Amino acid sequence: MKIAVLVKQVPSSEAKIRIGADGKSIDTAEVEWVVNPYDEFAMEAALQAKEKFSGEVTVIGLGGDKVEEALRQCLALGADKAMVLRDAAFEGSDSLGVARALTAAVKEVGPDVVFCGKLGIDHDNSAVGVMVAELMGWPHASVVSSLEFNDESSATVVREIEGGSETLSVKLPAVLAANKGLNEPRYANLKGIMMAKKKPMDVKDAAALGIDAGTVGAAGAMTTTESMQPPAERSAGRLIDGDPQQQVTELVRLLKDEAKVL
Image 1 (cartoon, rainbow, N blue to C red):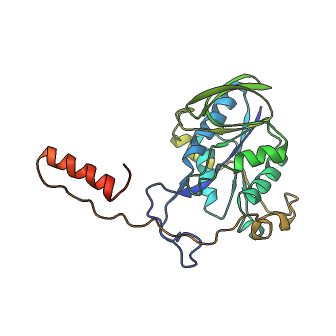
Image 2: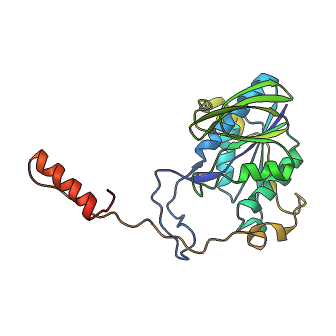
């Protein structure tokens, strides 16, 4: 079985995010970058599939030099190959542009299944995985919380929906977007870290992938960011004096007359 994993590098959830000078992006000067947490569940699912079917795992990431760090971490976990998509033409891509670039890479790999996280914790769009599936003409399942391969041609997945879950039978090839709880991601050991340094990492630009530069990057973007701003500062808390009965009475009055939520 040939397996591909789409990997994104994102700011750490503990990073202090500041708006950049252009007012349309974040200041990345002091940001710690990590593998997108949901992609870690996707990576673990890929490794389990590899172990079950004696498969080969290729990790794919789009970005600058630092994305190689994320892909190298995946190689240390047990992925066999990595592909970096890097080209000035990709800069300014929206979700569709990213999906077009990743789709071209997926076609080159020719996998039986593609894993990705259900979303990236930076833009939180939940769009790229399903777009890749659409562009490939493949079925997909997102928010996957349980996965069982029936054989190398189909899988049974459980995905979370509003107020419950649903079980789907998915024919392969397909795109599966992992949710938290799908598995317990493993840690790289020293042997894996050392071996990762010797594993192949190809760098592909738009021309090498056969991509029309006008369909990606700012030129091909269907959506643009007009501005960014931090959330409004929260006002200070308000203390209510008196005994419990007086506090309850005053709280109800405030909720009714000032907050107008009652």
